[in-house]
Image 1 (cartoon, rainbow, N blue to C red):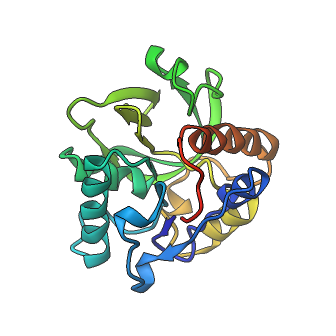
Image 2 (tube, helix red, strand yellow):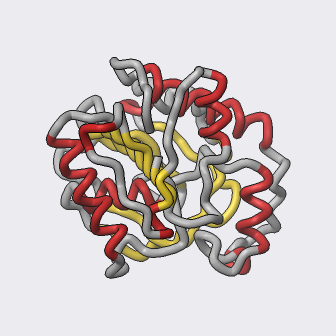
Length: 228
């Protein structure tokens, strides 16, 4: 798992992995830690962060090279928020400023393809998910759109059977959300929100969706995970 910033940690993912008995490693790429060798992990999960994927930062460029190599080797990849934008850009898609930033709880809907995708099929029409982004991405060539929201056409996509990306934050716990609200370096700015953000209001639903999404990702990896 690759972490971009202290304010965007594993959150719900760590809890799901623990329930499933999954061992994993956390690479603090934003702090200068070297990324794992692509051959040393069963899969790669890239977290969000406050920076733009278009910023000229070495650790972001290194992750895009890692994504390219992982895709070439057919290794499982899952990107979350900035991680999703990294996956999109590494696969040749444009990442750009969103027409309308999404900050806070917003409803999402699945496409027909999304309702058949094991990773996100647990999302019911209009379920609120935590959003905190100012940028959005186009779909890479050959990718299948899985979810959308009112202001963001591409909330999730799949490429083949091993690459997934979600723009929203299924990993966010109430504690992480409180940190984003308070922090100047969060993945956006609470002042952009049109309504107050209650970190607790969808706590049970968010935990259920995290289990559904990250549990399905674990199940989709066809080797025993021993290192992340």
